[in-house]
Length: 378
Image (tube, rainbow, N blue to C red; front, side, top):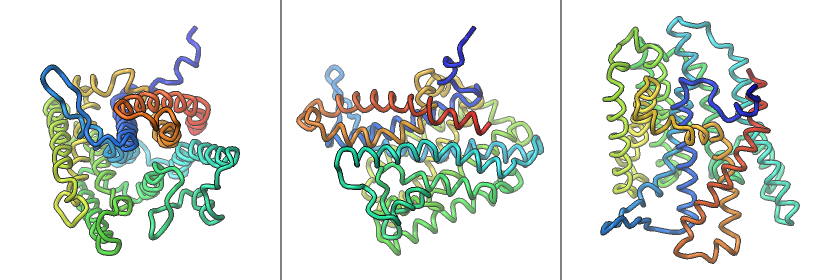
């Protein structure tokens, strides 16, 4: 008889396996980016024969994994609403929907908050939360970037309120996840994104990435996920072209992703001003992620090989805890004598230690914190 423990780290829904793998890649890519920053290596090259392969773009653009998270959230959470609009299921119960979202996000977050505060106290460090107002904001996850709000004590937490705001907004937007209203959905998400980003430059100045990414500044990424869910659910009634040409869709998605990364690498400084890349990059990038997701959901072999293998799917299952824990662990490792004294080998060794340590912690967090609440919400 197979023990239940063997199923802890498996994807229950096989048709979502590729999306789980994409989520795992997003989490690992963000980790790689933060290690690259902490290592202070400006140039990353790998010698292969007579060639030096420049991997700097791969390391320096890992922050874009956050956009992948946003697209996948829009895709996965919109599926039941898209099915409701298509008439293939009843309207999702909103109370149950909100309970499931709270049970998915807050338990692991609260445990980490308690550990970080308790660890600081036991080590005799200053309380990272300065006052009761800041503490209450952390409890309710109501932190936004200065000058309006506060910086969270764990740098990666900045995305959590954005995600949760989308969770709250989605039921009000559900009526747009319909083939007859796709153009209205597209116009709404792009207009709200561009107006917000223009406003952040006008009122806070250029270069405020965190403020420009607050909802609705990231609505293009969530919206592309919503659009992808609508296309997937209605692929037979709207057009069978999607399922018949998944190879073309996969190649187009991967090619656009590569072009977006090259564009960002060479126009990085323009991103912080009133420029074309500032207003359109995340939209085009998110569109490419949507294409990859649709191709994967339609059984494309290349996407399945890239994001449906056991290793990357495992990372996807524990991706939330990978995302939460890699930054505190990386900060601690970077400050130890062993890694602070390293020079040439600092990046690979720090990457190895951070990845292994984070995956170990994330596995424990998933098994004992996340999974019990996932099972409870079912």
